[in-house]
Amino acid sequence: MITIASPEHAQHRAPHEFLDGRLIPPYESPERAEIILAAVERAGLGPIVRPRAFGDAPLHAVHAPDFLGYLEHAYGRWVAAGGDPAAVLPSTLAVRWMDRRCLHPLVAPGYYSFDLSAPIVAGTYRAARASADIALTGAALLLEGEPLAFALCRPPGHNAGSDMYGGYCYLNNAAIAAEQLVRSGAARVAILDIDFHHGNGTQQIFYGRDDVLFVSIHADPAREYPYFGGYADERGTGAGTGFNLNLPLEAGVDDARYLAVLDQALAAIQAFGPRFLVLSAGFDTFGGDPIGDFALAAAAYPAIGRRIAALGLPTLVVQEGGYAVAALGENAASLLRGMAA
Ligand code: SP5
Ligand code: ZN
Image (cartoon, rainbow, N blue to C red; front, side, top):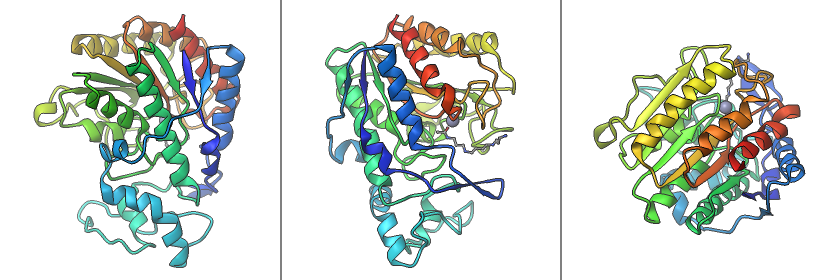
């Protein structure tokens, strides 16, 4: 197994996020990536390499050009227009009938973001680009014949859509990697999302596609973030109908329940017959997570890893969420150990 990691992530450090009307310290912190890296090193799971640089083309294959331009320049333009230098966060959100584009530097954040948990600071775009390069390097390694790669991405990506960001995510690393695999000749690629939260961005990007299957196991959005999507009746559209599978779950899910649902997800992936698997791996399913309400034990992660590996597919594991920082490194290393076994 090869791990891809970069110190560039540290350029992104949110000063705060809003939750339930309160300005709170961010759950998504630089120490998350450091702790995972240390645990992977300790576990001796194989070489740890730096990402290659892929340039803009693979980002444009997934994200809208105006959105990428916005992300790149949002912070500088925001500060120049008088916004708080601490971070870019919207004041007005473009919801439902208010969907006209207004690109004033103090207003554009409310057009492109869908929540108040993804502040942009000076280094956010550089960190997000490096995170996408990490995932792309993993995809390249699979194309070169590696059976298993771990993209230690930060910031995470699965909540970012073609032209929207939120949920700590800016560029959709897993989607960018999956699209690269398709464009490199894979007829079918499956994405399995095991983050506690629905991967609303990944779903949106591939919703009309029959060459990328998206399967997500997550907290029922009727109860948990992202609330406005991720329901079981969202099955895809047009040619993509039947190629989006949401498996929303109740609170308190334990190891046995989770593994049974995972088997359903894996059966759907097997039936699809993909050339590659991209695994959006979040560890906020852990019982001790501060923003999740599942009850997985540490022992669930190697078991999850073993079952996924039993598909026998070349797999790119992409780091998403997980906020129980003290346990995060071990949980990530355990999943990988299970997969590599
Ligand atoms: C990548 C990722 O995991 N993004 C998730 C962002 C979730 N942000 C909103 C969290 C809402 C938490 N509500 C439950 C409060 C704790 N009881
Ligand atoms: Zn999550």
